[in-house]
Amino acid sequence: MVCVRCKMVVKKVLDDLGITYAKVELGMVELKQAMSVQQKAKFKERLLVWGLDLLEDNKGILVEKIKSSIIKMVRDNSMICSFKTSHYLSSYLNYNYTYLANVFSQETGICLSDYIIAHKIEKAKEMLMYEDLTISEIAWKLNYSSVAHLSNQFTKVTGSRPSHFKKTTKKLFTPLDQVGIMEMAS
Image (cartoon, rainbow, N blue to C red; front, top):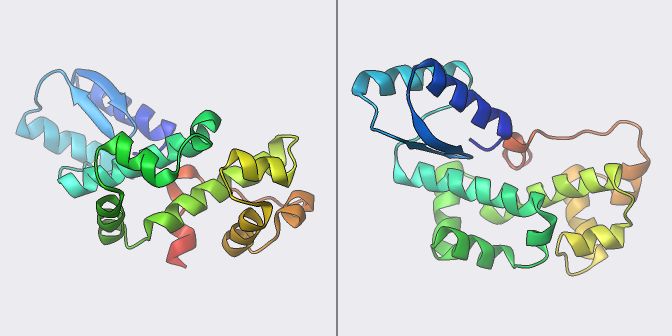
């Protein structure tokens, strides 16, 4: 569960089933009381209708936490400049970064660093379109070491240079829950 709409769907399904919860966060639900076997089966069935799945294994849950953490970090402008991604994930999730990267790639088939880059580039695309920032300012805000580094990664992921992307009339954005998945799968 990596998007706000997913969170809304989960709340609705829980409400419809009369299951009380303390909170619903991206990738996590805290229930007030345990679900019965029948409730869990019904909950899982209703989630599948919406294209969501109930994760019950620890590695799958950790992968969702990694995804949510990356989205949170990239979307919060004050966080991305403050930390190296590896330090942020390690401290936020209380695991060694190497372990997180290994679990992520084993479970998803995607390299964690590529997934992070894809999210940073998606954010760069949004900044190019909706904010009056130079490419230098975007590179700084996204914690890139240089404009060239951002430009090279941007070109690798999108197929066009940042300056060209900004000038084109047809802008393609990727839904947050698909960032890093589609690019790396092709």
